[in-house]
Image (cartoon, rainbow, N blue to C red):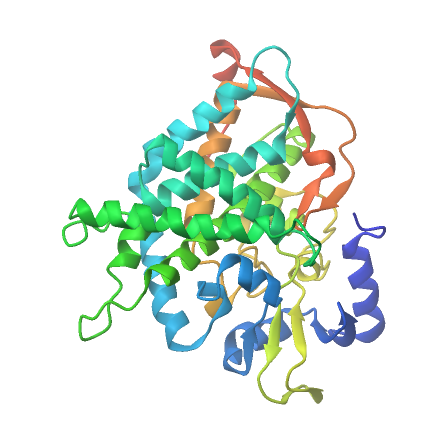
Length: 402
């Protein structure tokens, strides 16, 4: 947990040094950029001068062929394919199945006054939706094996890299994940679905071909990208939904779900910043960004800048009645490396919130003011809450607009 609010910390730096300043993070020289113009320069207009960069330990755990570790032709072709798999038209068919998952999850929280760690339960929900969107309907035993081994890998991803004896189980679980994906691929091929059906992400990955019709991805590359999508989809979406519940608790009169969700994403700023690395010496407004330096666009501070969002510390969905200024609202990133699954994330959020508001009630237990970072911002202790079913007479009185 931060000892100082990161909004205040970086806002103080920006006020003192301006929209661009240098610092060191984890031993690396970094350039922090805190204006929409500078963020657009790095992520959009001059994106070819900056490459995505992650700690090597993260690449090893997820897999070096995962989409977000790359740029160039490999990234461009793969990103278009992933975007196509998660386009509004494609994910529309998932709606009844996501509804089933959402209702099952919500039902499991009710009764006996049990205390729920909202964030942990939302991670389970996001994982199940991720599995559905990637593979379709899996046998229960295969799905449980995926869950078990992914949970181990997830702990390894969110911990510091060490060589302490006994920590190798993260690597073993990662290897088992690849083996499970290979088993699913073999089964999918045996079903002879590859030519006639391209329903889910796995089918698209298996049919990913170049202009000459040659298959482009190996099974290891497919496994890396599937695991990468699961990582990208789970914690961020779970954190977003947890924050939405927190803001709903604080602001019970919901006027329009979409604007409420947008304001929740702005306030929470799940992705506080992103990492890039200069591939050559770059000049921006007279400042030199040396080759090899990290560059970090500060989404959180742009979202909390009073110039673009007056009284940014106040939760006010009405601010989105007009479209925000360009490059000031980037909850899913921006440019060629923006989240390709953002439509799926929005869909599962809307479905869960719809059923929560119309069929259930809840109360948050304990402190509601603290923030934890693990590594994404989450309400303190995962927002402990109790849930129960709403009576039909009272649920019909809720005003929910989409």
